[in-house]
Length: 301
Image (cartoon, rainbow, N blue to C red; front, side, top):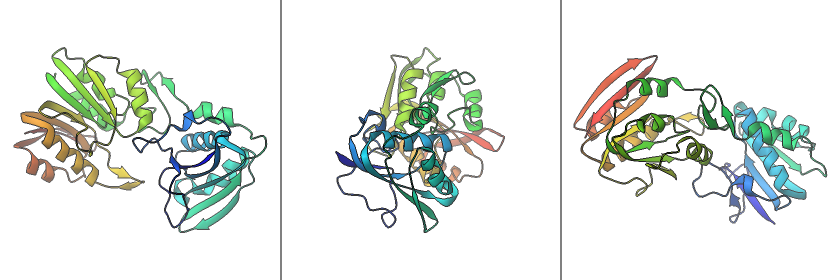
């Protein structure tokens, strides 16, 4: 029996023991929440996700793993699901104490003797096949149930690649599937920070030329060097806040691992300030296309 933590709750809002087991799929190396056996936890602290289906899935999985009388502290910003936490815990049969603090809502609850609705919430938030994408996916993954406009624009303008490449922030593997449509591609490294997306990409990209890593692109050594090409639709939000430094980090890593003459194909919202770091890191940079509020850049090292 042990303490678990999901995510990175603010230290001044929730005390987490130093030996707590991390369960967030967004932290490479964390334990799988789904692998915890029933009655295996004494307590859990959960920074609840903002999406309703994803949040209920996480809460249900934690309640499933808690032992009888096990204690959960669940918190979230008020505008990112916090105001719904107490009600959602009540639907599982919990008597939740709800405390507002620093723009968050903090709920404390014990696992009820007979929780209600756990199986239904876990089923609703679990992996599934989405027909309109023709892919395996799961709620909580970026653009899990639709093709986002930036990726669609990049897909429509990609050249036929050859040689060794990488897909930074591969998500479900949509770009990688298109890249691997070229027989001239000899190897493709997919890197993604969301474990759930990695697991879905392994189902979606069944190609022996593909290697998929659950890792942060910013971590040195994750991606092989001397690559011929890289494709990416980099994230630009961290903890719900716009953060262009994420895209700049992807650009810097691409510059480090591409061979001289290698190319980066990147799509981003047109307002994001990526042109300057691209020009600083690459020999030539051009906007291949701009449409629907997005730009596709081709940068050659």
